[in-house]
Length: 270
Ligand code: A2P
Figure: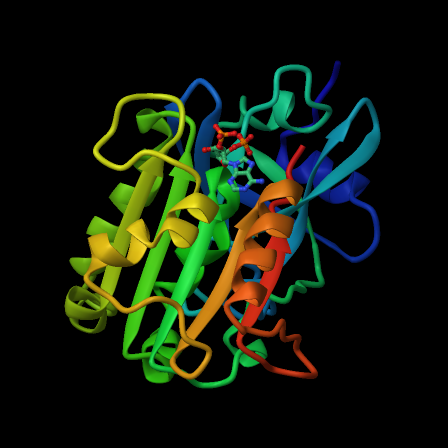
């Protein structure tokens, strides 16, 4: 199959309403996970937590998938965290990109995992599994998140320990960042758990909320709609089950036009 990776060629072939951007760095974490960064069009604005359509021109046809933007809205580049699906129509090609390669991005960002869709509170929990951590990689690096919440708790659950590497690196770097480090250092916490390997904390996030283990380990009170807010990003099943757990604790789902106590989105990558 032919994937068009040269900027000039792609610019000529790109469909309407798409940007052609250049990859600036690629980092592979496991056989199934990698991140990449690319140039950001000067006119492109988004809210931290939103997603865009990312694509490649394959055999003369554009193919797009939704990707959460993992970089904050102030960053001069754009970052994405991706799964590699064997024989996945897009990711089997995307995983081979190198710095200097050109890729497509549709012009319009969107999404519900944004601060605007939550009412103010004391602390925000960002619940993720796998690549669902991507929109939170954006939000934990946005000063607005710390303006709105005193405490920011990012949780990630994966099958294996190796899959937690991106989130661990991200939180470490965020705490040491010259721009956001001061805010994040004392107020951002990462909670990780693993379901299919040995690890200090085992189990799905839904189980850990229901059993109370999450709160015991963090030294925090159980979920309270008066103080706590939630954002959820993972597989369809994880979204549904985590939403039910939050609702059972009295939190209601919000949206851009109707902010409330939690918001839900899924990691759309395939
Ligand atoms: P488990 O290993 O028990 O299935 P996946 O790669 O399938 O999306 O899973 C990523 C992580 O999300 C795994 O740790 C998995 O746990 C967990 N998970 C899968 N389904 C759910 C669900 N319905 N609710 C909560 N966590 C889930």
